[in-house]
Amino acid sequence: MVAETSKNISVTIRVWRQPAADQPGKFVDYPAKDLNPNMSLLEMLDVVNDQLERIGEDPIAFAHDCREGICGTCSLVIDGKPHGPHHGVASCQTYMRSFEDNSIITIEPFRAKSFPIVKDLISDRSAFDAIQQAGGFISIRTGSAQDANATPIPKDIADLAMDAAQCIGCGACVAACKNASAMLFVSAKVSQLGLLPQGQPERDTRVLNMVAKMDELGFGNCTNQYECSAACPKLISHDFIARMNRDYLAASFRTAFKPKPAASGGGGA
Amino acid sequence: MSLIGNLFFSSIGRKFIMAITGLVLVGFVFGHLVGNLQIFLPPDHINGYAHFLQDLGPALWLVRIVLLVCVALHIWAAVALTLESKAARGPNQYGVHKWLHATWASRAMRWTGVIVFFFILYHLAHFTLGVAGQETFKTQLPEWTMQHDAKELGITLAKKGEVVHDVYSMVFLGFQNPVVSLFYIIATTLLSIHLLHGVESLFQTIGWRNGSWSAFLRKVVTGLCILYFLGNLVIPGAILAGIAKPAEGTAAAKITAGTPVTAPAAHN
Ligand code: HEM
Ligand code: SF4
Ligand code: FES
Image 1 (tube, rainbow over the protein chains, first blue to last red):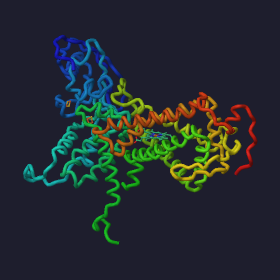
Image 2 (spheres, chains in turn yellow, brown):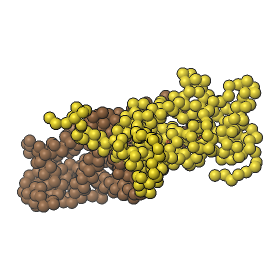
Image 3 (tube, rainbow over the protein chains, first blue to last red):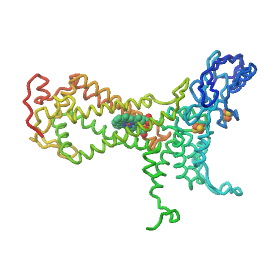
Image 4 (cartoon, chains in turn yellow, brown):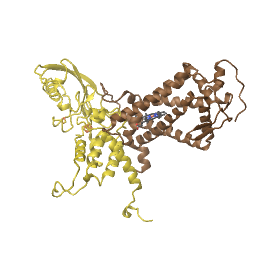
């Protein structure tokens, strides 16, 4: 990363403008002059929007929330890479000092059939919510908190589950994938629970239902090229995809050959 | 969904089918190469081996059907997955796109696969059915009388004095044609590239790959693909370049020297 610097820079931003989902979009160039290099990319967009509003133009719509790299809302493809030039950094944590003075910065929304564009740089990622609702939870009574050590979990397993739990659901993996596959996201969500004891009762139904939902929503198929993990701001590993493949295949076989309880129509014959 | 539904109609299931059929085909192509390298041994070896395979009868057909089913399923899965993925990408392409991690071999999978498919068709027409390159097809050449017993792994492939097809000469004569040789070389090079991504990829698909041994896996796969490439290069390459010459007394040696050979005896 470029060191903190005080010399102001000017850039041209080439931004995808699309008034609404059902209207065509195009790139429009805007100058962004005399910027403090230590302002973030989103702050730069704020400055440009300020100027656009002052001359009565429609400001550039972009999604953001925490601006500290933890919520996954800032879905921008910057110069051809989701979340911009750095490895493991979200769009909102990208600073103007990372760009050359007088350069052109192309800013586009995340694109995929399952992430339809709402307006300008905002795409609708509610398909991810639907996948989560298909199995990204555990069913337990909440009640009063258990003793912290009631269920021992080996440290390496806990760490691995935490690695998976880093996923902020931003969708950069889908945006980066030539197949618009959601495997990295889904594998992180499946593994985060499937690795832990509390996730075991629903382990098989979880992976089967989440993958079925992912397919149904029209995400593409993984070709093991790992563009996803290279774009992921949380550096989720594609090892979780291999883990999910194994889990899915095992769950398919287990479910097919498992005896069914009499109450559900199975049992003695 | 049912097990069959999961395997044939889910994204991961279809990938699994592609990986398993790919693995079967990989096993076949490596075995096939080792068998073919016998072309550099005296003619008894490859001719005895070919005779043994022909003689397997129903077992040969079983293997052929399994291989054809694997090719069909592999292509079906590849096409179905590719079409879905193209649709999933959506109609609006990025203005700027950067590749971040994908290897060149992985990016060429679809067209290396398609060319390999046409090569398989040609190869079957050439050496199995005798539709292409008919004049040097094994049934058009004088038959070969085994000079010695051909034995491999303790199995007798053909006995001394047995009269068998002269596959040895068919291969030599076929590869003396530069266009044919070049096509074989290009196609097997592309197959090696297909496998450079494919064999590594299948471990990921089945769920047997992870960061702790992926670097080692990559080296093994690269080594195998280089060996596969060289093995396939050397057969047409050495024949075309005249480095490997047909053994004395074979039909290929006579035809190469311009001596007419006796017309083939009537054969089944
Ligand atoms: C006959 C024509 C063929 C076509 C059209 C074809 C096409 C494809 C395609 C599109 C893929 C997926 C690539 C990806 O995931 O990025 C693939 C994977 C693969 N192919 Fe082929 N292929 C063909 C022949 C072969 C042959 C002859 C072999 C083996 C000798 C082979 C071995 C593999 C393997 C091992 C994979 C990896 C499966 C995985 O990703 O898990 N293919 N093929
Ligand atoms: S896996 Fe990474 S890129 Fe994909 S949604 Fe989660 S945080 Fe974003
Ligand atoms: S705005 Fe929350 S991660 Fe960027």
